[in-house]
Structures are given as C-alpha cells and as structure tokens.
Amino acid sequence: MARKAEKPLEQIVREVGRYPIDAYVFVQECISLATDRVHGAMAPTLHTVATWMAQEGLTPEEFRERWRIGELPPEIVEAVQQLGGPEKMNRHVTGQQLCEVIRDVARERWGLMARNVLARWGITRTEDLGEIVFALVNNGWLQKQPTDTIDDFNNVFSFAEAFDRTYRMLE
Image 1 (cartoon, rainbow, N blue to C red):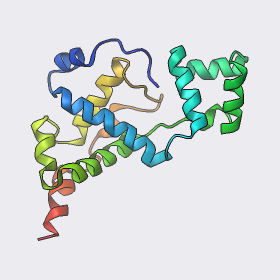
Image 2: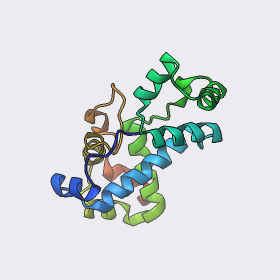
Image 3: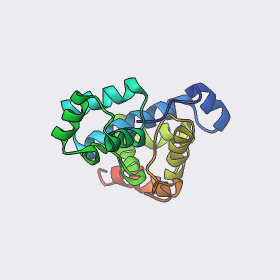
C-alpha cells in the first residue's frame, strides 16, 4: 500500500518523458501478478485488513505503529491476530522478482513480439523497469521497503537472452 498519490499518472508520464502510459500500466499490472506469484493469492482476512487500511489511508508503517500502541479497531486486531501478526501482512516483492514476472508475462502475452512491444515503450533493459517503478514510488503510487533501491533493477537479465534465445531453441 502506498501513501496517497501526489500526481495523476499522466503527469508522471509527462514529467519522466521516457515511457508511455501503457508501460506504467503494464508494470503496475505485473506488480499485482508478482505479488500473487511470490506470496500466493491474498487471503480473505488479509484482504479485509488491506481494505480497511486503504479506507483509512494508512501506510504499512502507520498501521504497524497503531498496532504497537493498541489503536486499532477490535475487528482489525482480531483479523491481524488470525494472520499471525502484522509482520505476516508483508507482500513485498523485490526488484528482481518483479523483473522476472514482467519477463514471463510479456512472453506469455506477446510471444515472439514481447521484446518489440517493450522496446516500442522504451523498455530495453531491466533498468528501465526500475525507472518506471521508482517514478511510481517517488510519486506515492507505490511503496518501497527501506532496503529497496533502483539498483535492484540493474542487469537482472539480458533482454536478448530473455526474449530472443528462448524462442530460437524452438526452431
């Protein structure tokens, strides 16, 4: 869960100026898929807590602080206890995990054209994915862990290896 978005996505796209809005939407979609692939589908109890947090506009840090000082509604406390505590609510994915899911989704969706579709959007290396993610982070659309950096997206894989050589083996 992110802090309140500071700007509309269209404004972020204009300010960054390197990638079209479709690239941002695709990356956001892949974040949800990556979360499910890494952590499994969101349990109903966690969904209840996440929905409440969104309605209250709470970041995970603010939620943990309210948990610590005992300022959560009883039904939310019960839900969090069922989950095993607030630390069990973390559905974070790393930059590397996200890049790998983006690669897989692009290959599934566009097959042999995956590299071309991404290139049309200006995405030719995993570092481009990091720039999109961190533009979203810096504008309140996404939240990062304290240990996350844009460098987590450096050289995760080669686009030539990921999108070309895989299909050459089928020839």
